[in-house]
Length: 102
Image (tube, rainbow, N blue to C red):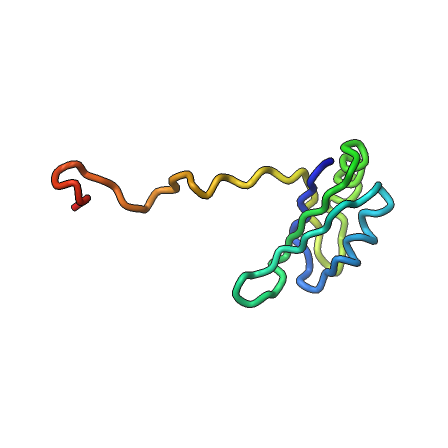
């Protein structure tokens, strides 16, 4: 199973639109359109899970750069999300003197 990233989508793109684009390439197990947590509005990208890796590769090759609703889609293999537990900088640092970080 391959997870495919679809970016640069129109905010009006629906799950049905994505299913229509990807179904000719193989069986789709899941489509997830990412939405803003506060407003619920689409953020312009989605993830499509395709059961067969070879079919996913064909879909990525055929659909990357394809114009849909006036926008050229970015379609490639999704990369794993980084752990949220890992430090990203800008946070509290213990400077060693008082143990309070001041």
